[in-house]
Length: 475
Picture (cartoon, rainbow, N blue to C red):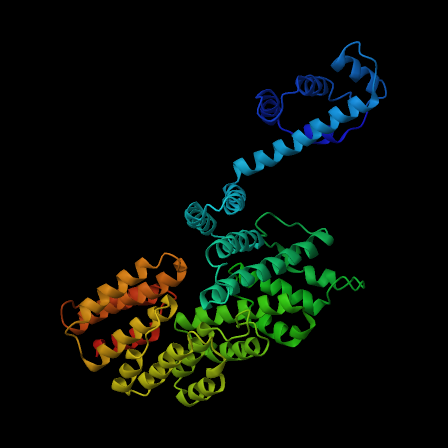
């Protein structure tokens, strides 16, 4: 005898078999006692149930007694048992996986319009996700779900707002990364390569593009495309040793990929250079600008309505200035300044003007532009506050600087909807700035320890400036 329910029951562990019986007996999911009888009989005869001697008539008699045999009655009961078995293993899966539990809960909270509870569950979900410390395809799958749920509940009533557009871009980024890493898994699976749950690459995985090139079907990528996928996976997973191979492979084959692949590949390459620049490695500036220009042309750093992201715009201006290329910064500024979100355009333009003037050492003019910024969007305000502190330091206006430091830290803490990594990025600068300031004012004297702390912090806003000030104090 064959039945779908049998395959599920056979897959259950000893503990799960007992739990499924409790499920059938609890009275909440079903009140049909025949199901329990059927399940007990199948368990007892599990090894013999597919034997020719174990007939449907025999099973029917054991369940229904001397009632006249009815094939449809037995078929319906087996179907009902299968449906409950599927429900049971689904619930069991959710119960042992916090991320799956939160994913299901988010959907239900949205369905019931319980948005306050959704906000709380979102914060918990992201913390659990980040605590895993792995950026594999499952990470982006769940991040895409959690962020999109939050987007639908919090900002769906004002889709034209720039905040909605920024959040939507983040959701699309997670989607494209999940899609690409999932494709990577597919290529591995088709080739029969070992793919662990965490995608730890062994030598066989590492050379999968050499094997994939042996296939001639159009459904498989060329060796060059496969290489790009492999390098993309490794960099996304934190292995940066193949960055230059990835860059070469990406730029030579970019147009052969689809929209989502191009977007994901360019963004991960650009983010890599941003991290390196923030860590103080200046050799990645030119790579950053090349990726950014490609993404602007392809509308990958634009809102859904086509406006240029203010983050991409301000970062490009700042990085040109960091290189000492203020003329290039002004050229970029004038080329793209009208492409910004109308709601933010004036404030972003003022911030970028202030940034360029600061690097030209025209501090008073820079402060004038900063004072014109009235729009309070946290991503801008974080940058304005930090630049303001730097200019006050350079001009020697220390009178109220402690008050500004404390208010800036409180402002960062108050922004609950800002990404944690973004808040840490700007907060780290302010805390280190305060230590440099105390050295400058003679309140402390251990320059070496502060320098060690700055070098150790990794990515930090205006890290090069902090190190520059430390070098001045060491003289």
